[in-house]
Length: 123
Image (cartoon, rainbow, N blue to C red; front, top):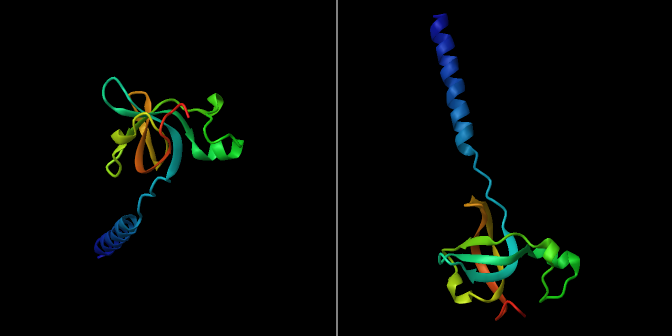
């Protein structure tokens, strides 16, 4: 009898733990805004060069078309299912999206939206 009671209590506890875990969701990564120039690599993949978080540009009071070398991140690999990035190769852009994991030693960024800042990276 004691064994049945203990087994029943253990099963009830396990069921409660499973239900509680199922109700928890994984937090979504926070959206970020990056500014830089879209370029096509030799392999054909799209990258953001001269990449820097948009917040750093605002805080430093930099001019709209300047890029501070000390705040730049390495080149970032880009991907998007929502934006045709290939139309903006050679453009200076502001990208909203989610930073991802490192892939082949390069940071990744999934783009949700794009705003063109200049038709050329030299502007």
